[in-house]
Image (cartoon, rainbow, N blue to C red; front, side, top):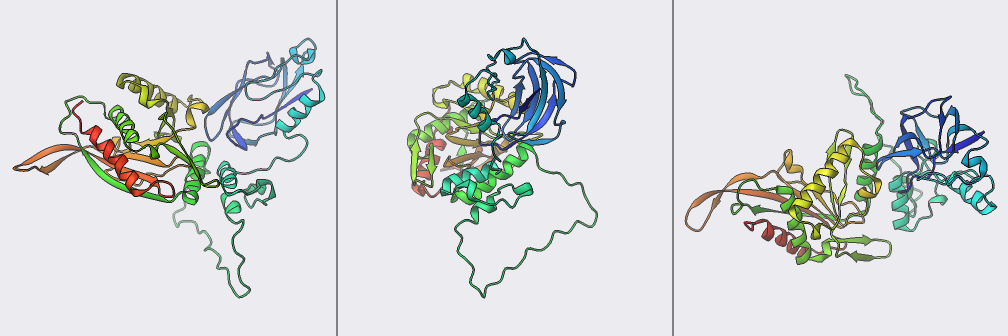
Length: 391
């Protein structure tokens, strides 16, 4: 009997949710055939079978959340299968050595599947914050459910001790509303958003500036988003310091020539931020095609995990729905995010008359630990100058 445990899916994630099984007990499955879909805080991942054999047990049902290293499925492995012969190479998300692999490979498998000892359970945001503060995550005691290490556990390290005469005032107990209501446990994208926003709250010194770009020189039928992406490139050329990452622990920043813009996309399941790579090298048509592809993939939950990480700048075009100004949230290690509000017709006083112009509200939030006010407004000025060009 072969027991397959949920492999490490990367991104520092400690658990995944079973979305759907593609097999049932009694089915025969071949190595690398799709076995199940799991949903993480980042994306939907297809897990292939590590062996060829008959399914004898499923250890989780759709909707269950299981930890990395927990038993997932059992097989009765055919004697002539690749696994029995010792040459199975495993899956795309983990490795299951054959019986003839050496002890080092077996030890690596044990470490990946958490066989030899308990895995330190922590929410991804807590892991990231612990790294930034130089805190050893394994030294903490988790106060979350089942000993899960939370952001509060990390933030509690190094806080000054209370004096003997000080008092702790407990938070008021939660009371249900008079009329009652449905309680929804946050899952996947919404849980990831809560963790990401908590990390931003605890890690970023946010400051926002606002202005408007006058679009009076534009012709008809313009593509707002691709023009904004081009304007971000112009802003980076004016002030490169906003296309960067900041490491608070080492007090260092990394400036990038490549402009990879994460675009916040609203979906029925929550917020996803796929990344358009090399914005500075793409034509308007290429930007539009890539943007449409990523929007479809985000809403279908088929966007790959590699397309959701390592953005160097962020864009929130909330104005496509409603809203004029906002205070967008910077997600570390990035240092800035631009928000575009709804384009409106405003009454403008020119030198000698009153005119009605289309104007785009702009909201720029930056991490004031590493970006100065002067750098921020120079960047915003570069964005506005490009947006106000006729072409």
